[in-house]
Image (cartoon, rainbow, N blue to C red; front, top):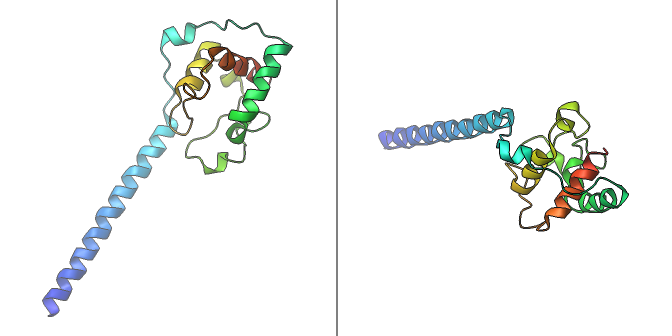
Length: 141
């Protein structure tokens, strides 16, 4: 009877070690993913915004941003929206120089394609003009 108890204890400890190892491996990958730059193909980077920047585009972009982006990226694009605390990856700060140096094509690609916690909006925002309007608005933040 004592041997059976030792076997159960050994099995339980072994299972806990394996589960701990799996959990740590997953968390390590998540940490590594946070550090990876978002790779955007040169063709996507070079894509030009066909929508003229102006009050009409910015207004339309703000409405779409409020509906689709504000909950994570925040009112002013600082990455401090109410849902941002629930995310595994940072929401990004649109006011930074690094963000603003991205081409409109890069931003278009990222909005349309998504990655990790950033959802793809390809099916939700089907009119490309709407994405360009969001980009024009984000450039004002």
